[in-house]
Length: 483
Ligand code: NAD
Image (cartoon, rainbow, N blue to C red):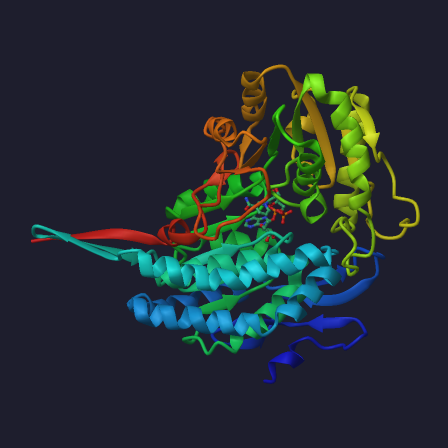
């Protein structure tokens, strides 16, 4: 099959009726058809036939057969495959970015970065694999790191292509074969990506992709005894159910869950730099990012200056068409997400927080689709719902503190612990504070990334780590042979 024909429809409503199993696009056994809605105007842009349990079992069985040989592959063979995957994904960067913009309204300036980091994940995994000793010997003991088996990879919609690439790269580096269950809201992006990866000439059935509902395809992956490992990115509620239901078949799990990340503004920060930086972190991916810095902790004595600096800086965060490179904030992914954001804004007002910027309703001129007003609350206390819950929209809570110790206490007073930021000019001081924050990552002064550094959460933000050698180790089991 010419793979680009897998999506039909041209400019009309597109249709996808196949899944990628055993090296080919095969017609869905599942019959449920789901509409894909364009978030900028609420129009149907595609219809997708969803997989059922039988499609999922078909994919698991293919991955299981492929594991018999790929599970014994050498580092050199995996390295070559990672390079081919990188090359194949690189060829469709623009198509992938366009699909993300169209399908979930991701702003193009962010979508481009997300796609590029997905593509880069293959090279980063290759580098980490070179540096990871898979065999160690001492005395009469030999320890080898063995691939865990067939891995089920389940992704969230908000950076679906990145999550697929990242999890696939680590699994391949470890020698696992995979069945991917992408978010059903990301069907178009997934199709473009799978078409691209098909060109990598992979060992047959190393990669299988079945798009369907979480409680159908995802649940089958979690309960199936032929799946050894689940690597999941999504909500805490589903993460808990995966841990609970996976226990029956002793699943190894990596869970990348939510966040309510604190940004600590220190009193020596240069506000003209620090406030735009804090807003970038708060409004990342239109606020629909697990790492979004949605609690801004500011010294009480500087509150008035901070308020003015926020109002001034907001002009750099225009709402608009996500395809326009000038746009900083696009629509929410769905009507449900729009309503969730509205209900949190209402809740913030009811609980006594004060709206500094934004508020309820659509921004003027963006009444169609799922656009919300980027909103900044002041007079927030950390016990308010808007300071504790993950809103997953562009809503920032400004919380005042009196002392450094209090700032650290507030930052850690959260059930989450995924990401955090410290902004200040005295680097020694910023590092000292960073080292007291209970989060998987803390950035100093800017949102920055390192594909070899671990990513993952303390507390309810998850279990395990991704990226670099940490991500590969999550797909490995040590085996010791003693003579
Ligand atoms: P979600 O939990 O609703 O869905 C995530 C995936 O799980 C989807 O593919 C869904 O179909 C599937 N799923 C649903 N029910 C399932 C079940 N019973 N068994 C197996 N799979 C099931 O989350 P979402 O709305 O897609 O994503 C938003 C959430 O993801 C937010 O909480 C966000 O913070 C989190 N997230 C975390 C990270 C991270 O790296 N820590 C990154 C991005 C998003």
